[in-house]
Length: 237
Image (cartoon, rainbow, N blue to C red; front, side, top):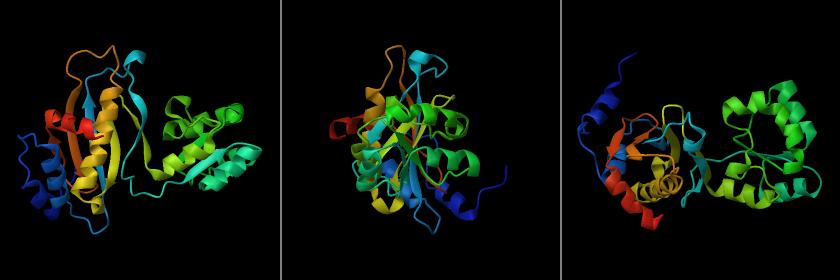
């Protein structure tokens, strides 16, 4: 593994690796230690006390970030009839039926970030599982991306609705905004995510649930958040 650059090391020197910071201070430090010239994404990494190999401990869902993500999310809607027009009027970047699924399979077209499908099109969409599944793009009723209410779903995704899903190591990685948002808005977004994760705690999960929480910018070092202070954001989320 290559060495970190001078700017990264300078930023990391400001962080006490043995300390758990209050969420407000952790976000502020993450912003102070960013080093890139572009508007870096701020991400939360939350390690949960679950075993994702067990079906009853799989944590997955969506959360509406109060200040959005700062990213222009490209939404593809696979539907037919009036639902195509509804999706387009709601702001979908692409909307259509089998012609779009053929474009994906034949041209390996993947210029979108989220896929929404109506239930009557899932027979067609199901054939894309090997392409969309590994990329986390497969529509799923559990997270609201298989629905006849395509207009509402498109508007929510565009406004900042994000999906979270625990990985094999028990960690959830979710972007909570851009560095340009400032600390206050990022704390609000982080609080909303943490609140959603707490609400999604599986009944089968035993012991300490929020094992660790880190916040970092795209190119910056991680800052450890004290889970006890993080949960204080629940009331505001």
